[in-house]
Length: 190
Picture 1: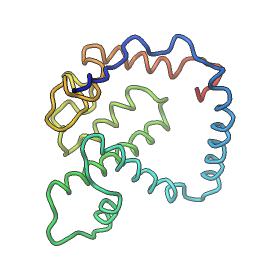
Picture 2 (picture 1 turned 45 degrees about the vertical axis):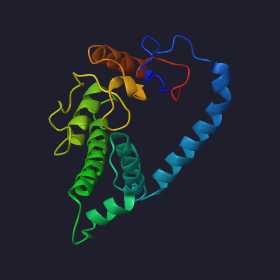
Picture 3 (picture 1 turned 90 degrees about the horizontal axis):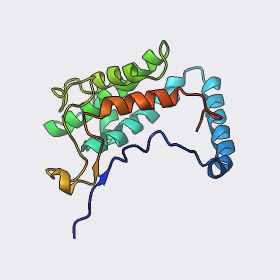
């Protein structure tokens, strides 16, 4: 028996009330971990040495959501110029998507030196993410205008695992997110 897709929980963000009692025991350890990480970065003469492989690993893992199958080893070998005699064009396209992810992160980091985290940063990073890869004709740097869903290849919306917010409601929802992340709160991490 097929299961129903999980749909975006419209009207539940931002949360009306935060359960502080549940979060308080987690705040200290999370803040301490961030402080340790910040300390490690501050002690390094070139933070890119530590962050580059982490960013590549994140790019590989995040790209899998879109069906990309490149591994971290394949991406690093490709960037180092180590290529098999016969390379699968699909693999090359997957590697390009991972490289775009890294470039998009670089663009966002550059923009965040001048701007707060905002929709403009996300949209400009998205434009870089979509350069020269599948989906490049689907409004890079803009919110989607058509419905989408996550599920097995070729499935319809009814067979999807997850159905995000509808395109007509997306701009207002994203504006709500941006307002929420810049709102005053008793704890910035939360």
